[in-house]
Length: 326
Image 1 (cartoon, rainbow, N blue to C red):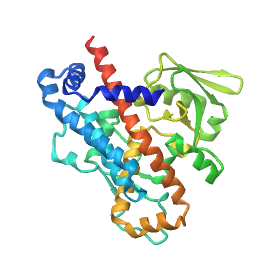
Image 2: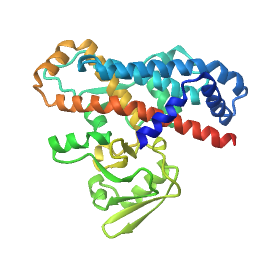
Image 3: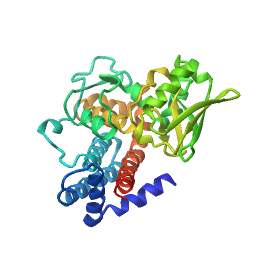
């Protein structure tokens, strides 16, 4: 249902006139001085970003795994640029934004492990710009992230972590259309936090979070209206189940939206398959390390989920602009 809903919305964004009206609503809600001119100027750019993105994602699904990370990364980047035009009508404001905004280790060490590899965040470039202007993150929780940590932030990876580590990284808390969600009280021990700390953390990061109450051995999260996953990095949508997931692993108890997680994972994987050809080829031909099942599963998830997540962001922007204008 969620995928179909987003797909129907995205199909409407294939005409310049529709896009111009969409962007006009976004710019009016931003109090831009001349939303008509800006929307007219950006409509074709927006359309081409989406079209290129769609081609990359479609080709990724048809292509061998050897080149999928490159196609998925550039599909993601192009759709992200369309997303940025809804909130930053003058993007790109400088050439600094043309850089990726992240860096990977140049030379892989002996006995290299993808899961232990790290990506470092740069002060300038696309990634910090996305964090600030799409998700209002003035400060990132870390200046570098391991691949294992990032993969744990994706709820569809839960099964892989259970198989290999005998414990999940996230827990199912309920259907994404609900207003209340259940957490086991044991999560306080898992995260090494108090109930008061959890409540304050949620109030600070979730716009519609109201209060925390008890029911037997469960904590109930109450929202004044249906929460939106684009306003916090704590809630993640499991696309196949259409349920929200919440961290039960202390190492990932920090807000980082899943779109940013995918950006960093796909960036690093695209760099590896371009510049670490020997390691990448050996991984795909011998299946010798435990990295393979994690990467294989992740690429399947990213191929299906990233365009839907970004489409849902665009729909959120459309609805927000419509509300503010009306």
